[in-house]
Amino acid sequence: MGRGHRYPVVVAGPLTDSSSPTAEILAIGSELLTPFRVDTNSLFLTSRLNDHGLELLGKAVVGDRPQALVDALRQAVGRADVVVTTGGLGPTDDDLTRDALAAVAGVPFREEAAVLAAIADRFARRKMPMPAINRRQALVPEGATVLDNPNGTAPGLWLAVGRSVIVALPGPPRELKPMWDTHVAPRLLARFGQQHLRRRTLKIAGRGESHVDEIAAPIYGPLRAASPAIDTSILASPGQVELHLSAKGHDGDALDRALEQAVAALADAIGLPVFSVDGRELEEVVGDLLRARGGTVAVAESCTGGLVLGRLTNVSGSSAWVTGGVVAYDNAVKVRDLGVPESLLAAHGAVSEPVASAMAVGVRTRLQTSVGVGITGIAGPTGGSEAKPVGTVVIAVDGPDGRHVVRTVRFPGDRVMVRQMSVQTALDLLRRACAEGCT
Image (cartoon, rainbow, N blue to C red):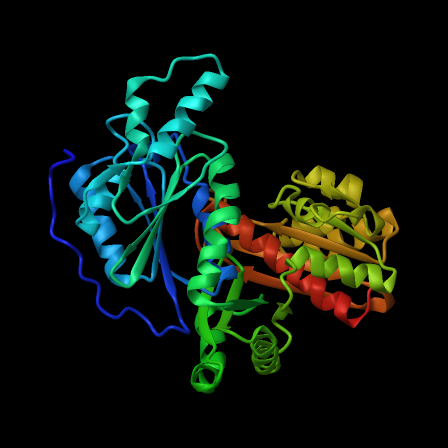
């Protein structure tokens, strides 16, 4: 894109109500469109934008192509109150962000003497001559405010376009992050006031997405119509459903109260399948239950090969309530190390409720814990039969005072999904058992 090439000026119409500002992020650089580089800045920027109450409408990665960059900027400015770009502010010919900003705003460049002096001084302090191409970094679109970058040669830019503002930041995180805190955050506060965006998440196990949505849907309407309004969304992953709630406004305490009431209403409607409303993962909830009741657990695994125990021991301090486990992949190990009777294996097969129950009892008694978990199944893609197809998994939990539960389930998907859902279901059965008493 030549410096003399001009594009039509964007005339941005009304975008959003002032109480609900929005934002978009554009990560710029062809290297981000390869398998070798990942855009890591967007997560940081999303968090900071949310802190200011800005709702993110979208993120995009744009290569170093002049027209594609201009088009992406023009579209983002037409939708959002704030557009944050990262990258493309360097001195080389493929650093096109400055050119695109000037084109979208329909303004010429000016050379900023202070920026040029700062770049030259940076090279001088390193006892190096400044390459001529670095002079490009002192070109500033007319009307833009320069954002100082003490950690690099590329200054940032703040440029109003219609009712929107474009914030252009360099790509390296060590440069971008301090510039955000020093220059961008105060300007956003001055532009939009003290906004808040609050979020809550309900995590649910043992129910499918459609079932959860059917229960929650009648509650959504009043939440969305309330003041403050609460936005809702549902997200499903293997063995888990999440309900995401968010609210935005100027009064953070009012948002928190409204969200707590919404969480309580949904948790009450869905019931026991809700295992977390405070961000904890399933294994953390299980650990807290065991710790609170002075219980311990051991796990005997066949088809999951130690994945259940791995999830449990991911939790810091889990040595207080995880005693150990046995990976009993071979039937001989089930017999020798868990005491599973050979007659059960012969009569029912390894993937059966009697064998899973014997595994749970065996690991509990031999490792002297209050709770034992046994899991056996056919993860595939081979090993299935008409009677026991791939995806058949049996899970047993054996507790004190004769408390015992065993369940046979059939999971869809490939080997990875079957194992993931098996682990999640085993942890959920353990959670439910511990809720009733682990000792």
